[in-house]
Length: 242
Image 1 (cartoon, rainbow, N blue to C red):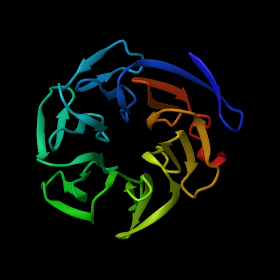
Image 2 (cartoon, rainbow, N blue to C red):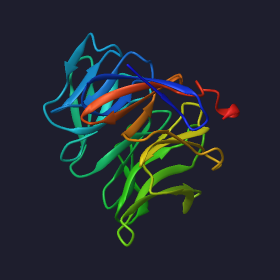
Image 3 (cartoon, one colour):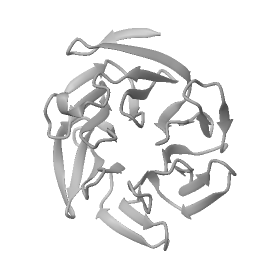
Image 4 (tube, one colour):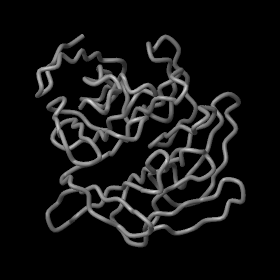
């Protein structure tokens, strides 16, 4: 266990969990999905770990916590109980569920959505060098990464009513929206936390990548040196007081 301090002086207790990367906490709080030579799930204490696939990356949970979408020569969905899986598209990466679970967003020469009832697809945004689309809860705004090769950096953008707009962040990757939709975690030179209106930007830890939230907003998980770490959120879900 490690104790660190945020820029505002909050004591942050961090703990190394187990080897792996790209952690994602299930909405019901029961499991953490991660990548370690395939897709795995584990209970938050690591007492029960189970391998779901031998290959694949970028696991993301369905809102009902029953399935995972992931990238592996296309976009797949797997049922975590029975292991049944289905390939939705043959090319693509960076899957992300809509909050109601009826659509899946992914990247394939632009940002696409697929209706999980009809399997119909629609291009949301054309173009290359985009990653990690994330739909804001109770909103039509979509946040995504865009790589700028001229400056070798990633920026965060949002789509509002079909129009892309650059956010206030630069050199930011792996966006993760808080459960209440008010805060944004991202990685750059460490793990950062910021309000979606751009106020109170704060560096939480000096290194790490792929941050994500616990479903109650009280914990943050992330990658560091080949392991998954968990730490307390300095705000414990109290977004309005950031």
